[in-house]
Length: 485
Image (cartoon, rainbow, N blue to C red; front, side, top):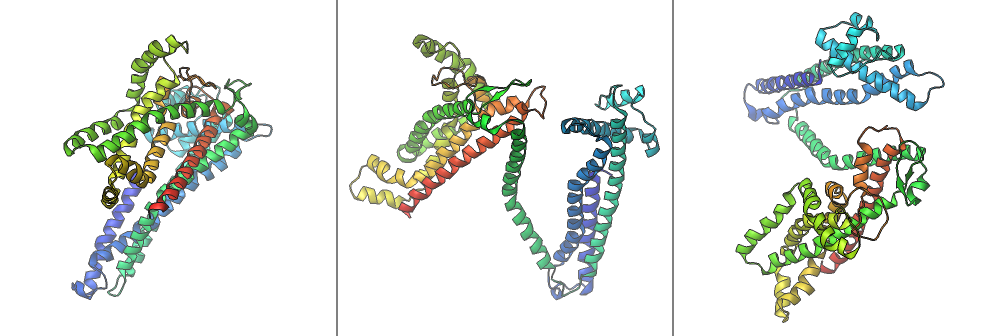
């Protein structure tokens, strides 16, 4: 039975339990709900929760644990002495692929376990049927691998049947237990509220658990990478030269330099323009001008980055090459750090202006009135009172723009090129960490090679770098906020 159908049945049992629980609660007081401790619907909710929640928890645990248990049993059938771990992983990948194909065949042809046992890898009809479901099986498939695939499919089918029976039994047991607890003095409301509190707590933990999961996945894969490639060479080398056939030099500094260079130029464009636009909209513009200008600025945030990339490739890059780079003798390429930085800065203007505008507007009017009362002009009030008071929020806006610049990929690919180098010339092609993460994980590459696993080390490095920026910004915000509290 599929997971979706099983969930539908469990929820259906819960709905039936809700109806029966509500009716039983009313029947216990001869239809007078005033004699019940809780509302009739809350009694039904308690039955629904006891029916559905334990079954769903069991299903989640089963889905997490069963694949590991099955793979552990199957791995023993393909493991032999003298075989490297990478070869075993490749064989297990073939086992899983063939097992999924056999499962599709069994579902399509209504095959039994005996029919599955009789299959052999040399059967041409079988190879054609597997190819029809997207699984290519050649004539040179190892018999041990094919037998392991059949064994895995058999274990998966048996586990699915056991899972269905256990979950349905748990759901029925929960329904029966909840029905026995329904009586006029049963505190059904407390049960419902406790579950709602747990749901709210779980929702609040989603972001935390997601962050922990991302960090752990990066750490584990990075550790795997450093077992294959020295960490000293990764952090100290000034050359980026992946070969995929040995002799690779995977130094991170050219990528970090390109990331910082492009981001610096982008912020050099976005921060002054965005901040000045925010000051004008908040302090000088009339309501009519503001109602038109602010939406027009925010439209920039809605343009897809691929459009910005095409704009950099077709318009900005050739213009900078023809009017600046070539006349000054600084380069002949339309792909450059300056191209990507300028276009990315335009993209970041609404991130700075909109947030800074909201922060400036949130400064209390009493601070403006006090400044004017002391004889300060409007510009003096903005420079000496309003902007210092809004500085924590402005720093947050700049940090958001910086994070957006550091994580941008498409504009850099089309505007700055893919050359990893250390250079001060802004009209040369360079690349960033995010671009190389994409390039190392795409294409016909071997996932277990250092040249592919380096993407996780790059991701972890970028995460640590942005975390440091966040800590620095938080320190600045707290330092200046204390002066105005």
